[in-house]
Image (cartoon, rainbow, N blue to C red):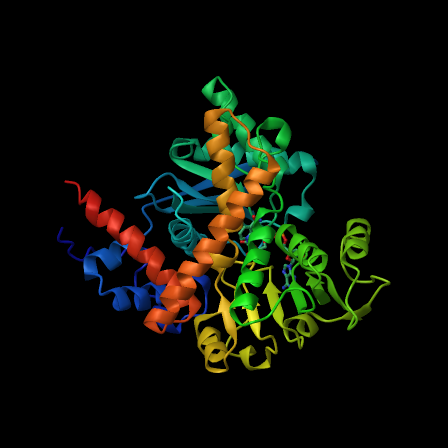
Length: 434
Ligand code: NAD
């Protein structure tokens, strides 16, 4: 197949600076792809094809607020690629959401799904709101109208959303119900991360965090260390960070510092994480936990620990602060927490980064299991799910580590090389229509 360069799309059109010098998520994602395409010696047209989202939809979402006023919000869904199967990716409600961020996150989903051998492409969606400023009823109306607007491009064989920042299993239940009402029958495969009562999977709620901890174990073992007795700091105490801290604590790690958007807490002797979970459930933040001293976000990010798990938002470790990171291993629970420049600085200092597309892939792995179960209407046990998740994560880590050693790449370089090559191969094999 010969692929000739296409005109630049809005996503790849030259911004004011080349991708490699941009610090925004899309700049990072394009820079990673550019380096990987060069390493794999991809033809320019194929590189361009992979840099360009396959399909994007931006919709206006009129929302009737509880006081009767109408507010018009904007929703995005980007399907970066679906050459290997339906597009798959989360839906984010966060004030910083914009189309470029959604494009970056969708591209990372494509690589992630390919890396852990799922028959999916990548997608992402988002609305720029602070969900905490909206009532449950408002969030339900917003989600249902957004689903209705995006309906033409969604479906169990087209694009399957899942929870991300600011959305949860209830959000997925509303999407499933709205889609099912329109279809005239129940379609459980339209979303993953649903509640168990409507076809969710055992193990999904903790899957991303379980996967993070499988990677923590794997990277420590590779360096002759053990989780038990190691120290950890976790940034973010939401769906990913909370369970990562809890599972690390249960495995015998000393979790010495934790933060969320509102505050941070630390204890050199180790935090009692189950008590911290109970405190955060009541207080709405980790701050003020009586079992530790109040701290700052920086105390967590730059803690002197074996393992740092950033599990909040993008770009938190950047060129301006990477030299202050004291952890020996960074295991990326969040998507895109380390900028490209910071990645190089960490690698130069011997800090090992287990990249997002590997470290947080546990969520989409169990989403895949949920989708398979929903499509078969046959449910697996929690033990089966956890065993299969561990196998996938362990074998993906082993493959990435072996490829990195063989080709003298960082773990991120290796993970990208493996996944981009898989997607490129799918394109080449399918050929170009017409
Ligand atoms: P969430 O909304 O449940 O939690 C986010 C947490 O981060 C909250 O505790 C919030 O207070 C905290 N936070 C936000 N900004 C912060 C800051 N500057 N400093 C410290 N804490 C901050 O979201 P989530 O689902 O846990 O997602 C977190 C990250 O993991 C995102 O990057 C997301 O894309 C990624 N991720 C999530 C999943 C999943 O299954 N939920 C899967 C893969 C990747």
